[in-house]
Image (tube, rainbow over all chains, first blue to last red; front, side, top):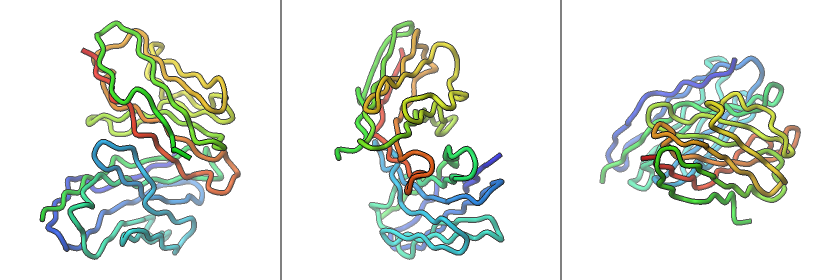
Length: 113
Length: 117
């Protein structure tokens, strides 16, 4: 079956530091990959996505590249801000399979001023 | 569109009471999901509807939980009787149906925080 593995948090950084949150996946088909973000007290919201190998998704300074050879979709940002403090979820959806999205456990990011 | 609307935002109840959580999905979305989020278990899919029909309810914990979608604009998740271990944040999410462009992108509501004493 499909699965998503994320690095455990919390990740604690100082403002303007470089961020990487690792995500690897297992899928039987050719999934689409996503990063969702959950700010305190809110629901998850889509941050970025990529639908095929070598695609790069980007939004709000965050980027992730779909790497089929390493089955990875790591999230990066060059300079984090305090306002980026949130929980980040990696997810996949296999349009040719059950379609139901599979989420990782989430990684908490804490950015200090 | 106002997004996915959930109510109530917060519910505190006593063990044994019935709890009903409500969700209004985004107009035009054909798929609806109910999730439960806890610190211990993370985000768990409870049930998935497509075109108002339950497709996968394998995540529903036990018979105390039930979900309905009587029409395209409304769904409920009911817990009867409630227990302290049901305390969690319950999210509703909707998306376009399978085969549609953007089908696999979910829009989440703000959640309903349930505390069972």
